[in-house]
Length: 443
Image (cartoon, rainbow, N blue to C red; front, top):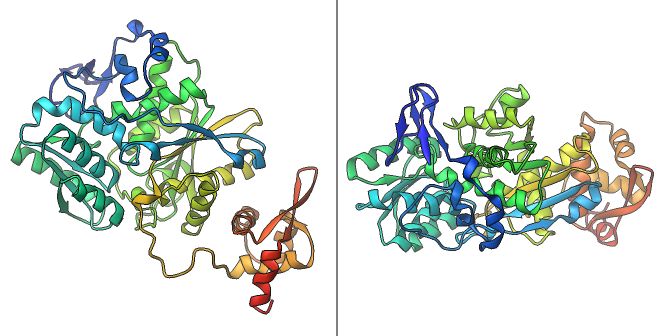
């Protein structure tokens, strides 16, 4: 492994800062010496790809990585090949376990006093588990806005919990100060590039199992998006891959510092129900934009009212995901509706974290409906109709794509169903459950 500054050429070893000369450092390997055929004879997991990971004297591992790739039923309905990379199967339930195993293993000789991380939850839970496994103290700096499920994990593993700031952005410099003052090894992704080497193994696994043409990634800080990009770039460097898959960043409309720049719209930085994506000023924004641009990818914005739909449709695939992961489904639906994908494309959706970590305390019933959905239900109770026809009948300032989203949600609730198809037109009708629902409303 070599760590160099792309500007001045300085080489680093041991403790590696994130930047030099104002430029992000580059971690490189002897790519000509890598024989990927050796991988297939090793057990699945992050360390399967040791030639493209930092050298460590001791591996701190909980058998992370090697997560399944599942064919999505939703893809059959859309007429495209869709696959789900289920990172909820990692030891603490998120993709950050890939970061923790590499960062903790590498940092162990420098962590006599322990480790520290600034995190909005998942990386903190991962560090807590892996530091416990290593027998070292862990300090986790987390924002005030964090799901209780993640707090439970952190405290259960015995980590020191420090609540600081509203979002993770404010905790990064605080964690850096703790690292310096207490002699801790800092594994915060924005402050330490080593852990990202573990996250890039998602790309290696996707290449081995699927060779995707598109990868849809929930995006907060941008570290996972960039890690996956680096993984595919290294596969190209070793001659295993010819063309980079298109990387698609998904953010919520309320917090969109990366996606807004790609789409050319005004960014927002407000709290979102998808707390794992609440990063107001991502330090890795430029690297994430590089990943999108270099892969000829794009970005998608998802509304708060679409998060429940995403979670429900993933649940129908047998996967319980937190809101921050559920954004990938409405993003897929929007792109499919716009005709973004070709029939032979292989689209990978990255589910980053388990819904068991979340806390959904909204007072309203998730399956309650009103407004536009109720109007659509009433229309379909009178006649079988297809999407564009429904849009015209509503006679309101609403995008056609929004009608498609409402139809998907009503279908996931079991209130409507597909009746038949004429060419590319899909006709819907009200189910018995939908009629009973209307009857209870006097509709």
